[in-house]
Length: 242
Image 1 (tube, rainbow, N blue to C red):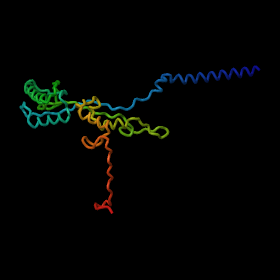
Image 2 (cartoon, helix red, strand yellow; image 1 turned 180 degrees about the horizontal axis):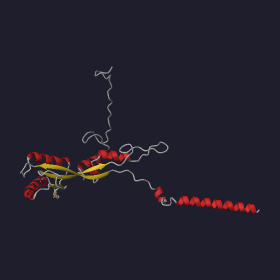
Image 3 (cartoon, one colour; image 1 turned 90 degrees about the horizontal axis):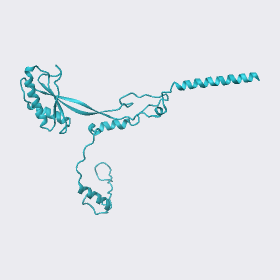
Image 4 (cartoon, one colour; image 1 turned 60 degrees about the vertical axis):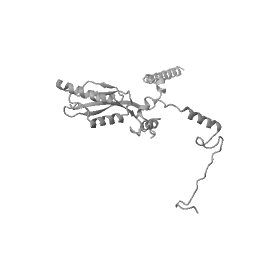
């Protein structure tokens, strides 16, 4: 009887020690809460960044007016950026000696006048660092919206497989990448205003829908059925079918 009691006490002691060891192992991962364990990774999403795009307006030695060639190149640059009236453009001048300050100021004013004539305000930024641009150049800096694709396995990062040889994929990656390839990045930031609606045309479409009219406006009576003309088939040799 004494041996049985001692054996039971040993078993209880061993079970208690095992339970303590198990609890200690669990406590080592106590920093991972239940909410964190159940939380899903954020879905992939496009990111739109504004990147500066610079254009150099070149002047001849001693010249202070924009030549016709440089004026055309500047207009083409602004048109390529699809800048709308009201969007700001920056103008940057080189670092020069004090004796050349007046000439540089007149060049900046000439470039500024051409840009503002297109309805775009101009911001004069501090001169560039010495040696960053030519002494006979004026930089025009615009901003362009660029869509940055998310990290997607198989597209811009390698595919990783789990222990069952199954690829780890990110749901929604293809949709976001296709959207970035098709859409104008500026439309991902803010939408475009709708054009004025044609109330008369809209009313005609609603009336035709209610009356069951088919075809274009003015063709067919209300409620007239749709006529389907079968396609003629031939031998495919260009002659009449036999």
